[in-house]
Image 1 (cartoon, rainbow, N blue to C red):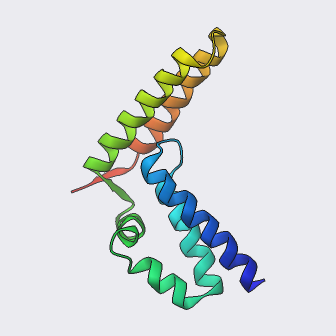
Image 2 (tube, rainbow, N blue to C red):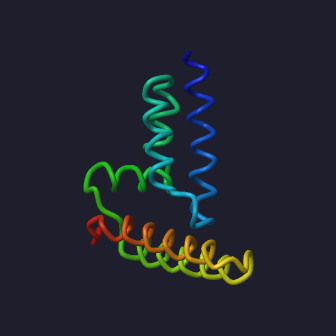
Length: 119
């Protein structure tokens, strides 16, 4: 079971890192999942993740403050809207699919903006 949790934590970690660059993958929840899986399977990997120069700050900020930095909010919401408007224009001519992209952008933006802003 320990090895399964390490593998799942590592997959979640890779997806979280990819989520830094792709707006549709949620970085912080995936990193939090990695931390939760690592804490149950490998203290060494958990400590590495929590104290990582870049990734650890996502986890610590969210766990301690339940807040997202303003810069991250602006970039995230902007990238979500740019990506989903682009998708709605280029992927399908079906009006319902276009509407679903816009509804998805609204939902993701609302979720991101619902957290406090870390100053």
